[in-house]
Length: 144
Image 1 (tube, rainbow, N blue to C red):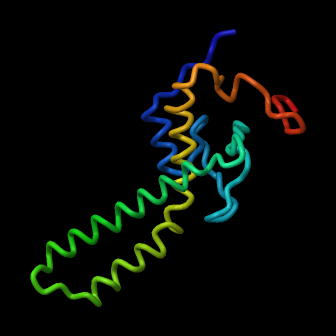
Image 2: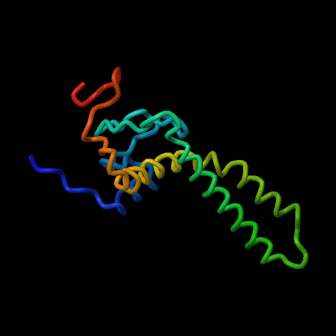
Image 3: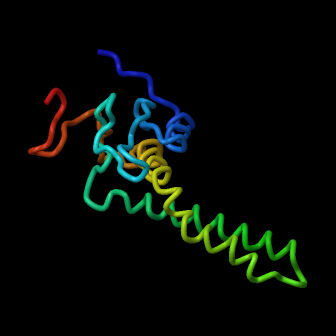
């Protein structure tokens, strides 16, 4: 039995940025905007590999939102120095800080899964890729 060709890291990351499964590229990974399905509907990849798995997604969300806030803040300051309009800047920056993490939440989860599958699983020789072994006892394994 021949192994399936490996998907490129660029493709895996693109699928993550477009809220798709990093294994097969399928969409429909969310019940609602914030509620992710536990398994890919097409290839059955289980997304949360262990408790605390999505801590990386939290870090990605914080970096993306914080980066957007910082860039917006610096650009706004650079464009308005020496007379900085505080209230208009707050009307722009506070919603970024409040709503940015919510809007970016589903993207951060699929990006984290893509980073894990595209980069981290390849770096750890003691860990096999998900498709090479079954799920934990009590879970659905391959063909189960």
